Length: 104
Length: 124
Image (cartoon, rainbow over all chains, first blue to last red; front, side, top):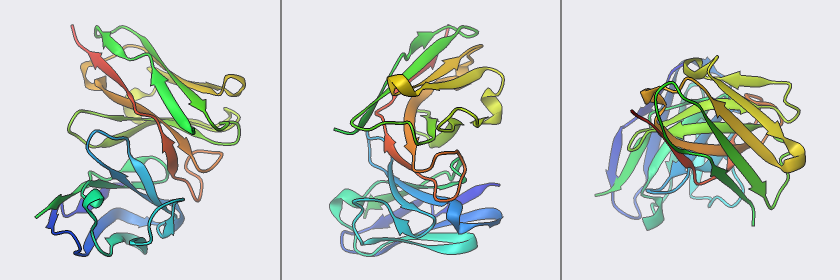
């Protein structure tokens, strides 16, 4: 199964809403979909597991949704520290290629 | 402090071997699957291998199958990656990561603790 993330780069201003997409090449169970954030020079950080459950300590501006082949990570109002690369992951193995959220 | 610390990376010639170690502190790995994930500088993440809490379930990405071996020692709170027959394309930053679940690829999985990585460079 291939995960395709879009867009590759998202240019937004602080306070704006970010919508990131992760599409699977075939239908998958949402229980196996996770999202990560990676800031420059840092290790990834788990944001969401089971497609919609926030990990411990993750602010509620981050939310995950979706089912079947289409999954979404939404950041309701971008904070300066949210400008980073975001990855989806399936079955604890395959990663998407990432979406870079950059400051416009 | 909860952390994972990787070690063992370095510069190695093609065809040679290297053993990476990952030491956990601030928590015990006993009940969790553990994984290795790599990242080529400036590129994305690639999952490499995972091992269940009791070592009964071990999985690898196709590109390292037969060359890499993951293992764990729960008594030492550590995970290892033996890398043989290294190739230039194995050059990457290797992260150790703890899973939320006991067995790789199970429902509810997600890598909730990561180390800072150890760099492996394969070059002559």
